Length: 288
Image (cartoon, rainbow, N blue to C red; front, side):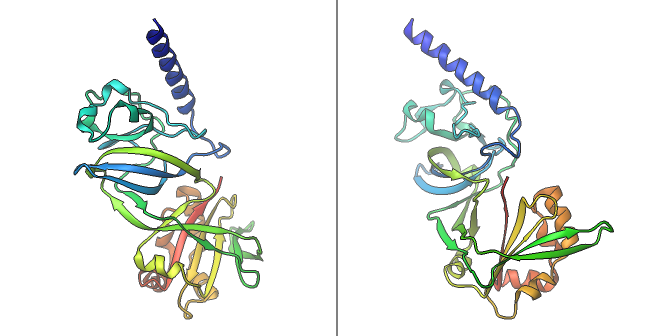
């Protein structure tokens, strides 16, 4: 009788949480993205530990138990659907930590709809170490805001900021979801809406650990929610040189339409080349 009551209680809590989760997250929600530490079980039965930036990924090869805005795993996948015999050195005790599981490990795929899976996962970016870049510069760091006047003319308004700010970044490894059997959530480090992890290659990581010639930001005109951080590592690329290489009207529209996913398209050919040569590094960032 006690087992039945516990089972019914768990079912009730799962259904209640799902109902709460499937109400869309809004801009004023406490959190919709997360910086987390995970353990991945590969197809070769190796357990690997990483840090990653987690969004609400949609199901494909991997089926996800999403994380809700209150930092809880929502268990769409029932314990009895997982074939734990296929998971090395593991049993049902890890069930509460399952963040994602390969469809091949499911005894059946009759699971709750993935209504909040906004992002398709083609590769999972991870890093073995999260590093920090202190962006305090009381003499030359500038925030630029895109301004649109009544005649729809675009310009930039600047302000020198002296706030201390940290950018978190890491040298990236990109994992094909097809190579993963299981992802376990080890811990949630912080809400990623206000502070994302930027993924870099080896050379970019080395450059970011050094000083840069200039660093500045360009914010959207609508809400100041989205911005681009530019770091120059070449004296030829000054603030004015980078700013003159931006189509700020199209960038501003892209901030509104995609959150800045396509801003690279609206850089000049010379700036694109400088970015490919790591003379300039840029990040698209946002906050709710």
